[in-house]
Image (cartoon, rainbow, N blue to C red; front, side, top):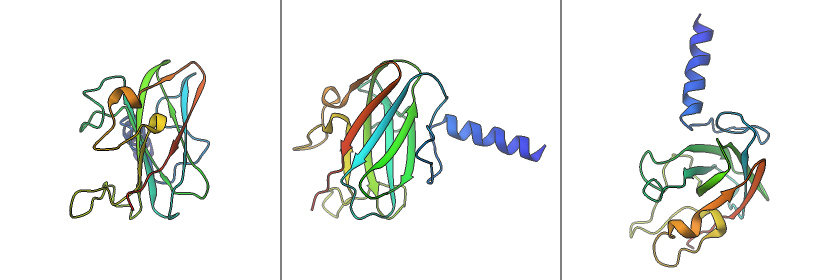
Length: 157
């Protein structure tokens, strides 16, 4: 009975979009279905800590908002490319934000003057000249089957 309860609890946590830090590359976060978004993050340096990848629905009010995410995965930073996969409910528009959690504290750290102290990025490699990118520049269309989303990590150094 304890095992069944623990498995039910784990299924509930995964459905909320929280993933174990050591998610395998061949596993996807979310409820399995025919459509998925495969995210390939490049430019992670140094190769330590985790990369947090957050998937948002097609709603500008939910983008980067507390509790606005659909799913989140935290995976170990790896050389050359860090990969994450999400099952999505349907072909639709989505948005992705990433950050390199170098110290694995599950927080996007900033400098004393408020600048990013850790790497970050967005779907479409949307530019961030001053402030955050617009939602329109970040959203992308996930089609049927698998949609590949490459993202380059950026650092303020």
